[in-house]
Length: 439
Image (cartoon, rainbow, N blue to C red; front, side):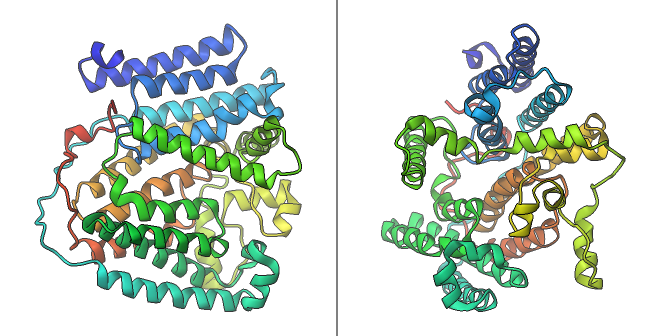
């Protein structure tokens, strides 16, 4: 309805944001139900000012705050009895809402990148596929040998992923080569209508998932395979709703099989929601730690010192806090993720960090739309990675130590793939690329 009433992007952005603020703070202070108000505010803004594209920083922001906050806060036993009366609880939920509100507002503004002109003639991705497949296989072999060999992976299975110290370079080479190959295969399948390529590649990702280890990285690999089909897809369409529903059903079934000792549907939901414990981590930091200027902001630069000078300094906010509050996890090289709100709170008392957050949101949104408007496979690969990487930052900090190699690697991939043009010119990524209305 709001789409018919509001004539300009700016009016729609301001109106939907204002409604989100009214719903959240009204529900918080008048009804004492901040968790429910937060979910309603998110859904209301999604309805009034939805992301245009299925995959973009704005859609990733919305999905993150629904999955990591709105869903568990309303359905997990850890939070459903929480009264939100304690000072740390009140402050934390306000931090979460303000961060979402600021990010949704910033990533809603129109961008005016002119779409590059390109010819349908260009390089074939076949050579890229063979070279990247060879590199992927070589890096995987080195990675397996460095982490104990085939026998250890057979005995330990996926748990061996936690013991990959010293094999980081081989692991990163394996993942990056795999994803590079997959987006080329996906593009070739889309261009030549060869669906068999997709099926074989999907099976390959399934077979390699034990070595990939990370759920987010498995998702990224699958998206690389499908992104040439998806990059122009709208956020809210009947087909996408069916696809999301099917994906959600598969996830529920997989969790049910893993939780096979209990046949209660409610137990399945609790099992899933306990995975998204980011709010609990934020509560700990707000309750226990007094913020100081730039307390942990430059931790990622310690990674450079560790590599160059052999120091052993903490370089990751989540690893640092995990070592303090979750020593058992830390001892087995597992990490509890602290959110970007913790980063802003520890270093800027949160409120003074809002300009930093606004710049962060604007920068990633600009990079995404600039790259996707290039009209070539390199831009597509960069844009997809940056959208998923954006979500990774939301689960960590504004500056992350992987930035130091990830952006150069993406630029290198762009240079290699930029001569492969996309096969359609149907989408205009100029002003209409405002990540605007979907249906």
